[in-house]
Length: 198
Image (cartoon, rainbow, N blue to C red; front, side):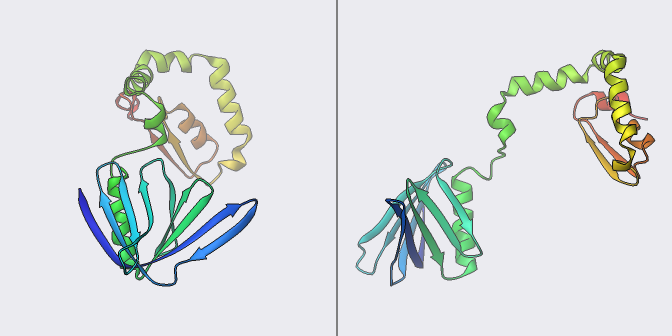
């Protein structure tokens, strides 16, 4: 467990009692001790007498955020506390500790939260088959509808830069070029990219 100390942090608390906002500020700067583990950060703010004024544990699920260049807000239930650091450099050190112990350095996205690894692999595998792309292109109602929609809205494409993400065979990219796009970037992550190369 790594321990970091920040000697001059101000604490402001904001609470919502009976629909009225109440504020409280500690007059003197406090000592912030941060004990970090791979999953959480334990924060302890103490005064000059080493009496604990505020303690909490921060994890990935904790509602908290950076505020400006040198402040950080934590919301626990109906109350929020604002930690104000004496310098942007001190805040930056604190923030980097939090990012590493709350798993922000690991790749994390909504996609990975909601998608099983095997599901993502199957998706790219399925759309990577040339036969699947051919089936979609031979669905003339589908392909014709896309082409008409793009060509009838040519003013939206004329002299624009178009990014086609997950382009598959690249057919929609060609339609964008037909509609007058200045430049078209087609991006494909599956093996279909090799089949569609010019």
